[in-house]
Length: 248
Image (tube, rainbow, N blue to C red; front, side, top):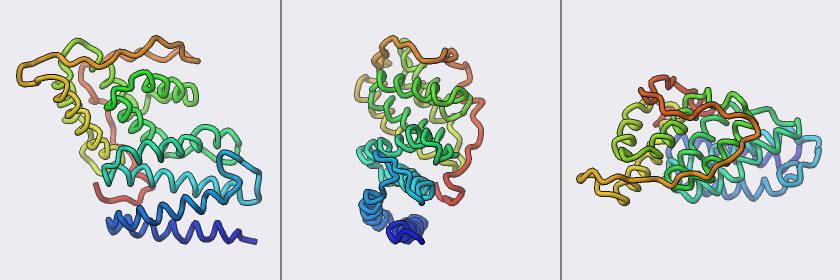
């Protein structure tokens, strides 16, 4: 017998996606609030992880909802909502997958890269490296993803002496300009450029330095994070989120 709460979740999620396609982000925000309240009633979700009959389906739709919530926060340029919703989403990328009832998400690398970029923009470099190390521990091939490489190389270059503003401009020019999910990184690139402008007079070529991260010991040896001479020359076209978003 179908769970009436789960049925209501699917119904409202369908309405959310239709509103998103119509770019009615106010309706999306209202529906998202309703969806989160409904998800709180499902005991298979974090932090309880109960083995209910519909656990797999509930975990999957909940993760889909939070992935859409993160993307919506970029569309509406709401940095606080991004952080709040990504914190919820992380539970589905790590702990929930560990239950064996939820396969990895094809969007995981892309959204984790966007979160790394957010931490870089906010100059939270210790957290940046903590998140990166956790990600590599969970997925040893993480640094092969072009979006992850983009952020790692950008972070490394910003630690170098001077050139932060020029580096940011080069990174923006090298970003893919297609309709892939990662083009939403433009929002954070705008913020990063503003941060650098605020910290130094770019017209007078003042050096702008980002806080160096603490030394850390990852659970696995992480490959060198050296800046590649042609930043992002290896970046490839990324899949569009959920294959359904045709707008940038």
